[in-house]
Image 1 (spheres, chains in turn red, cyan):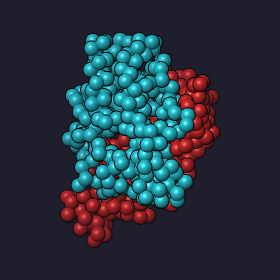
Image 2 (cartoon, rainbow over the protein chains, first blue to last red):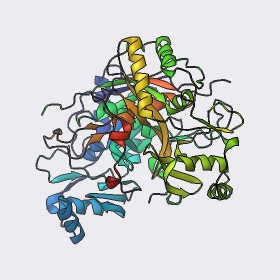
Image 3 (cartoon, each protein chain N blue to C red):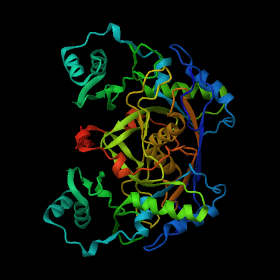
Image 4 (cartoon, chains in turn brown, purple):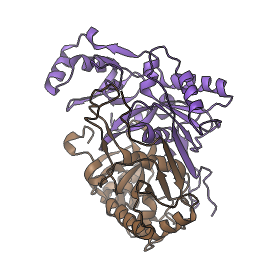
Length: 262
Length: 262
C-alpha cells in the first residue's frame, strides 16, 4: 500500500513582527506587508503560504466600532444585563448583530449573525479595542471573506506571490471549555478538503472525512498569537491548503438542514 | 504599554517518520521513540515540546477493536441503520459507547461517551483500522489521559527530557462543516490557559479568555498528519503550553450546568 498523503511533513508558524496599533482607515495589507519584510524568514512568500490575520485588527482597520454611550438598550437587554451583571448597552449591541438568538442563558447570549456565524456575544468584543474606558466595542468585519480577499490581493501585488489569507476569530464551542481560533474569512484556497472517496491506508474509501483546513490553520496561528493583541498576524508555511478558492460563509457554515444544534 | 505576552513567536510541527502499522500489544511509546530518533531535527527533545499521537494508533496499540460479526444489534439500531443506509452492527456498537444519546438524526448518532466526550458515532471508527473487509471497528482508548501519561513517562525515561503529550481525535462540530483534531487526552501540561485577570494590551482585565491550548496543538498537528493514517504522530515545538499538569476529562469537558447544547 502506498502512502496516499501528499501533504507536508513539516509546518511552520511565524508571528509577524512589529504591526503597530491599528486604527480606522489604516491600510492593513500595507501594515502586514511591512511586517512581512521585517520578520526574519518570512520572505520570499510561497504560493501555498497562508497569512492569518486576527479579526480584531481587520475590524479596527475597517472602523467597525460602536460607542456604547450612544446606545439605548431595549428592556430585554436591560433585564438580562441586570440579572447577569453585564452592561445593558453591550447586550443591546449583541442583539442588534443577531438575525436569530440561539441561546440566552447563564449570562451568555449566543446569536446567529447576519453573516451566518453562530457565536457568543455576536462577535462583539470589548477587550483590546484600544479604549481604556470600556465604552467602545468592536464588531465583526462586514464581510470577512472580502476582507481576506483584499489583503490577499494587495499582498500579492506587492510581493509578486499571492498567499492564502485567513481572517481568524476566537470562538467558544459547546461541550468544551476554552476558546479556539477558527476562520471567519478566507481567500485563495479551499477552506475544506474533502477526502471522501479517497482510499484510506487499507484501500477502503474514507467515508466521512472533510478536513476543516482553514480552521486548523487559524488554531495553529493562535498558538503564536494568542497571548496578546500585540501580535495580530502570522504566516503559516507548510500546511499545503487545498488549491482553488473558497469562502467561509459559503463553504464552511453548515446548512440549517444538516445542523442538529440550532 | 508593554507586551503582556510571554508566548513563542515561532511554532514548528514535525511529522514523525516511519511509524509502522500499529498492532495490539505494540509498545506505542517505543515506536514513537524510534520515530523521534529517525526524524531529522526532532531530537534533542525540549521540556516544552508536545508529542501529538492520534487516537487511532493509541486505540490499536491498546487493542480496542470490536469484531462486528459478533455483534447483535438491538431493534432501534436495525431500524436506524435501515433508514439511513448504515451497518446496524456498527450503530449497535455506537449505542453501547453511550451513557446518553444526544442526537440521533440525519444518519448521525451523537452520543455522550462514558469518558464524557460528546461526539458523532461515539468515536467508533471504521476507516484505516487495518481491516479490508470492514468488519472490524476501533473504539476510543479506555482512558486517553492515562494513555497520554504512559507515552509521556516512557518517552521521558528514554530521552531524559519529558515532553507534553496529546492524544488527538478528529471531531465534527455544530454549525460548521468539516472536522478538526482536538485533544481527547493530555499529559504534562495544562490543556487550558486561563488569561482571565491578565491585563490586555489596553490595561483592562481580559474577562473571558481561556485558551484551549491542547485542542489547538492537536489541530496544528493535524495539518501535517491529516491526509493519511501513515503519519500518526507529530512533534509540536514552540507552543509554550501552560506548565503544570492536567487532564482533558477533568479540565476541558464542560460541566453540564454550563452546557447550553446538551
